[in-house]
View 1 (cartoon, rainbow, N blue to C red):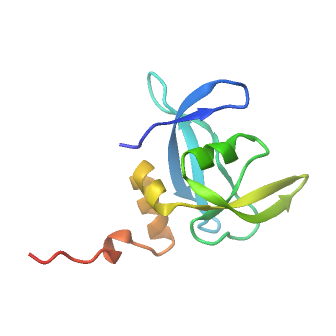
View 2: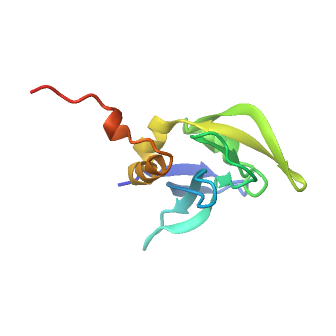
Length: 133
């Protein structure tokens, strides 16, 4: 089961959210979204990442601070990743490139990370050393 995080929004409220991890179909780039955890079922809250021209390096993605300026603080507080120092402009917006922490993402959304890592040709299960019995 995916873990629940708390996000302080730009409107002064706190949302209980879960990560949704996948890949963008056109370039296999890392997609991270947020779903609110409600009484009945999870509902889409917004996208952490934005799909810009070209593909960012594996485990990296541009963060959509245009629609949710609180995302950088949310990423830092939850140790999801770190700013690379690089940005990319699209239209009137400039988006920061983040290197996401694969171990933390696997902990928070194991099924999503498994699918993403298969899409980029990385299978963490194969990288583990076999146990000797």
